[in-house]
Length: 151
Image 1 (tube, one colour):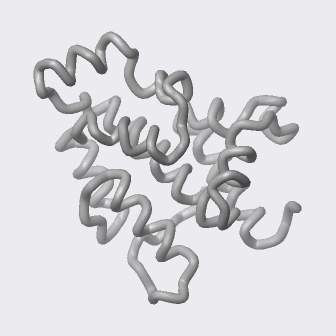
Image 2 (cartoon, rainbow, N blue to C red):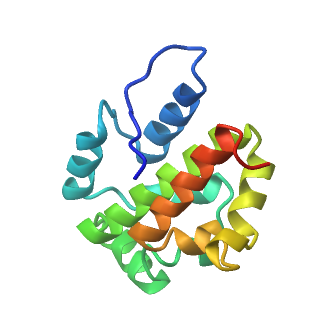
């Protein structure tokens, strides 16, 4: 299991960009992983879906978080995502921020996230991210790529 520290260490740290993007996506101040659990329990605003979409994710790639009809209902009634939906949105935001940091280029990051990977049984990283265990495998793969284990 990969443990990721969310505490920024300096401006030159490549993880700082990842951390900053995660804060932007979630529209929240994050000091530690415990903050992410609190954010999920407090339930994030549906605008997180819009921010993920603005970063290049398509509607069908976000549908595992919340079905379209439910999202429309939540928007109309000014409701927040459920705790479970918030957890999924946070998980996807973490993966997206990590991929952008690892590849240093949004197009390369999105291509890697969307393409089938042999290590994931031909599934894409985005497909894997729909479950907690799959997301952990994606995080591990990104760490390995970042550290030079895989080209």
